Image 1 (tube, rainbow over the protein chains, first blue to last red):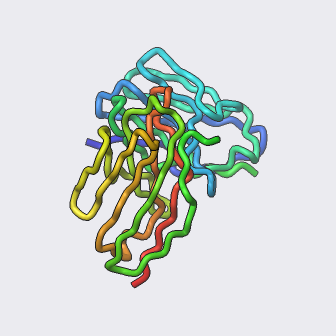
Image 2 (image 1 turned 135 degrees about the vertical axis):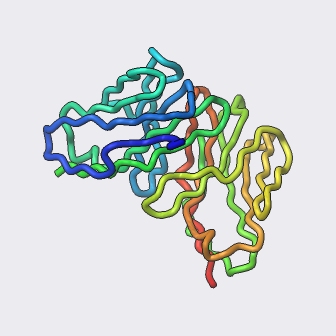
Image 3 (image 1 turned 90 degrees about the vertical axis):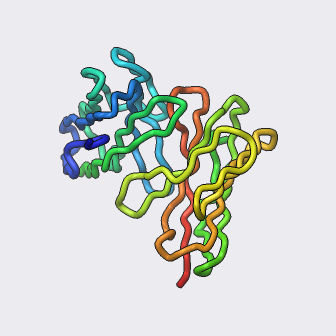
Length: 111
Length: 110
């Protein structure tokens, strides 16, 4: 039972490059989430998916797109990376209103 | 006004003392609240959850919820150096997603 897994763990991009962060969960949760965490800012919600086939914007969606591929997988895409997107990205899953379980995070640096 | 607010700290307490962490929220419709602990470079891990007014105890941890005053607190008894971390308060505030405070950094001095 792996819980929530994320790939990659680390990534360095140049401004303008694109990439996709992958997330998968094996807890049969309906809801999945993408957060970013910057120093002193806590966790800010980028996008979430309340159930398979649905996605909704969170607090900071600009510059990102998401795909809920199936019940297990939820990916986050940066189409044209900017230095302001340098952050740690966490994927999470849950059955609201219960607790969220987090993946190990992806450290992204955009130069 | 942020939906969930915490004092960023650092909160410094001596080993063996009680650490008191506080959180306020703005959405009166919020029903469930969570405390996560996050060590530097790691992902958040759940410490406590509370759904009802009053106190909930689990080992050295006690969560308190007061819906009338819109605050949540976490007490850590017999604080240990290993408790030194950032503590995140979170609640479901409208969206079906947790909204997090910015976290309080706790330092337990040996």
